[in-house]
Image 1 (tube, rainbow over the protein chains, first blue to last red):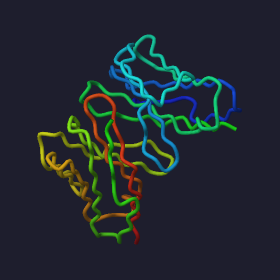
Image 2: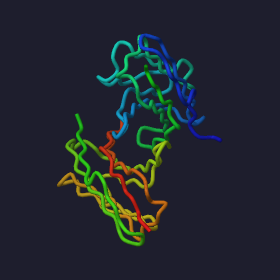
Image 3: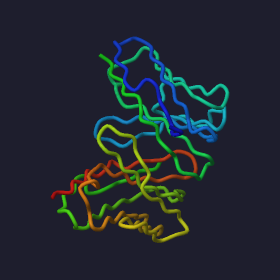
Image 4: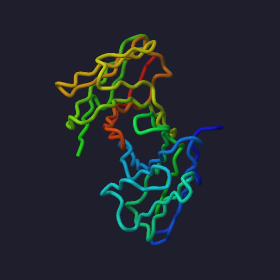
Length: 113
Length: 110
């Protein structure tokens, strides 16, 4: 499968714990995006990378959230001191250029108890 | 920031009928208008897109129209089939992030 992959697919954690998600984009894609989707809503933009540079962050991305893409390939999204309001589907997408189609991964569903 | 409004929120049609979903947006800088389909528990998948220099685009049973002056765009599905049942999102893009509408739950009944 050469599509976008995400790991884990599901994560259950207790409030206050830290969690980290991984995204592997389509291999030749230089842009990588993170979105969050809550039940009944459309995905909301969190941040994006061009190669290893993080170029934009949404106001939704509080200080507890950090994303990295150290070698311009896979990316990680870490949430520190999780809160119940962080429960959502975290989607990753990738594209080849700024005007190209964004292809989404299957998402990581986070449940904070 | 961009605001994308989508309606209806739910749409039920008989198999073989047409379905129309309409969207409006606020940011005149938006120049890319994809539509994504999301089945329950699955990833959003692009079904068709249109760019600002084009007014209409068709791909088999799916067509999109764009009115940049009025900031309206719409999705038309003809000859609907049960497998068309899903949530459809209209989306705007300006080169970086995508802004999604609130979604339309389409149900195609036999």
